[in-house]
Image (cartoon, rainbow, N blue to C red; front, side, top):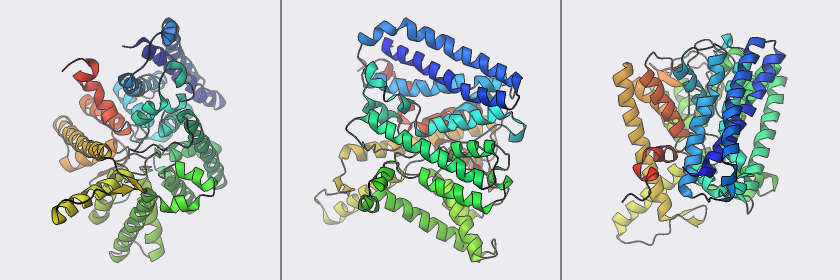
Length: 487
């Protein structure tokens, strides 16, 4: 392995250890001194090897250049390392004595999935609750993106890391340098998080709950500080605020800078954003109409508001629990599609992404025209730019990979975990789409606790693969990746 890659991993472990200082502060603030000691040990376990590796390979920084393979290795292995070392606080604080469950919970956080193995979230210490929320916030925009300003010093092209980690097939640069673009994205991310925390505090949440829910909402993660999720607060105001920010988090963050620059026409003309709005509108109307027609909701307004929130909650892959309810099969069918689609590219949402779906529709439309009219001019465009054939090929490959991974994972879960095959399929779809809640017998559930280690590991790697756009993760299992000279 390239020595400079190892040098980066050392720095990354130091970063993970440094992030754990935040829950350490919360542990001290809430008088959780035993848990504070556990976090100190966890921080030390991250810092000592991190500093050692960084120091040992410091001289390699000026000696070696990094290629495309190394960039993919940095992203994929870093996410696995984050989950491995991020699981330590769960073990050391004693909230679980099973490392595999701790690994699952951490991966669920960093991948912004929101699935959990804890049946009673309220029983967890405040420092663990904030650590769960923080892992989602860090994973929302991409952990390695944080290093964009530093990567040039290591000879890494930020554009390569962006292609490997940023959600969605299209990464738009706001400036001539990706490092500056990453900084602007995180500025928006931080400001929106602060604004949401303030609004939630005004709505009646405690200071702690407001911070935790703001972190997880902007990341479209869905970890809550209460087992009942948002239903615990029983507030229309909180549902409204969370719904608005779920919509924002599922939108391409580059559009916010167009908004600040007064480029309203470019926002309106953005094809992905318009398709995103169309999906929300159609889904909301279909679900609300069905709920009203079947008498599931008393009034048109209640059915419309409920349908809008559940649509935003699912499409953005936020996945907050909203209480115990039974979802009608027709509505469930719509929500499954929304869960698979996800939000826009360059957002914090999971899923296939709206842009991919739109380009697939355009490719299918072109294929139909060719079959009807014979040879036709290929003028298929996306946002007034011709769609490159390589983009279409990549999207088709992604769709195939998505289907294959879902199929294999469902077979493994069904073989070693038992249960209903349909429920297993929905759980896998939820994990790979980083949604979190699954539909157990048409009821919404976030709890994935199981005694099967194989099932836990399968769910864990499916979540990481889904967050890294599948190919970035699966490349580690390719013999060609480890032996590039292989024919």
